[in-house]
Image (cartoon, rainbow, N blue to C red):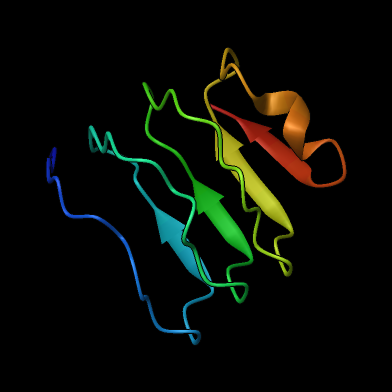
Length: 80
């Protein structure tokens, strides 16, 4: 099932550890993620730079041609 939404993700709970946009066309900037996030899965066509990488991030899953993948050189990257 594909889910599309335009909700801005601001003021998320600091208890969130994983966030996934798999099977979605989420098209908003992700610069307000809580520092508690350990895992991010971006949508296939996500095109924005994540300027505030969560401090506890361990792993990111994204399309192999994600324009800003080099920003995650210190993290485990899984390619879709």
